[in-house]
Amino acid sequence: MSIKHSELILNPDGSVYHLNLRPEHISDTIIFVGDQDRVEKITKHFDSIEFETQKREFKTQTGLYKGKHLTVLSTGIGPDNIDIVLNELDALVNIDLETRLPKSQLTSLNIIRIGTSGALQSDIPVDSFLISTHGLDVNGMLHFYQIDAISNPAIENEFIAHTNWDKNKARPIVINNSASLQKHFDSDKMYKGMTGTAGGFYGPQGRVLRLALQDASLNSKLDTFKYEDIKITNFEMETTAIYGLSKLLGHEALSLNAIIANRPNGDFSKDPKQTVDQLIEYALERIVTL
Image (cartoon, rainbow, N blue to C red; front, side, top):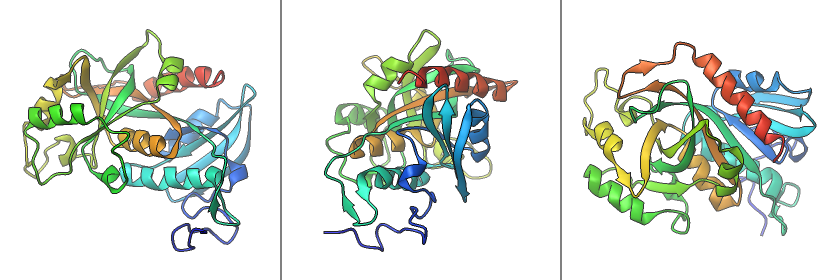
């Protein structure tokens, strides 16, 4: 049965509703950034750009870098935006947009997030790079999907017990990264650890301005959590949603983080733009050989 028009919404030109993209506009390797202004910080390295478009915060440029066909796409901030981006990208490669039927042969995308993050461990310095080995979801968006086959209940249960997790909040979810992509991008320049994904920047990440928190000690509990050799190393707002939806849809995903703040030490990078630029160059050199 074909997918209803109300469920898969297309623009008059046949592009998917939010991203304004058609299948021929993207490559099978896609770099995610949060900030739309960061798209051109990556594509300035390209040899050529063959396509670009923007709708709202979703900016896309596709071109060639050292002969490799790549797409760079800004997702905006938060797991709700990742829900839009990953579902629409998957529709572009795995649904026939004319018949509105899923394809019999599915395509797996390589998705690499290049983002900024704050460290939760005092021994991870600002201006360093970090690979997210796991994502820890503390916002709940992924619970709207069937995630039992991809979650890690043993780690989740330990985290719930360690933090005395409030029953009124969504159950935390832990999702692994793509092991093959981690192997490809790893080096002695990379720290590794579990990345927390929050649904907001202030209260959900333990920041206090004028509003009291439900659990003012949550960040210190995150700092001290350990399961076997896994620690929670940093906090941001997209990684676990990318990992979860990618696994459900059959794509490979990896999150690379430029650490521009250290929360326990109260440090912030003196030149965060340079740190991000260095991570971009590091990632591009490895993407070429994917």
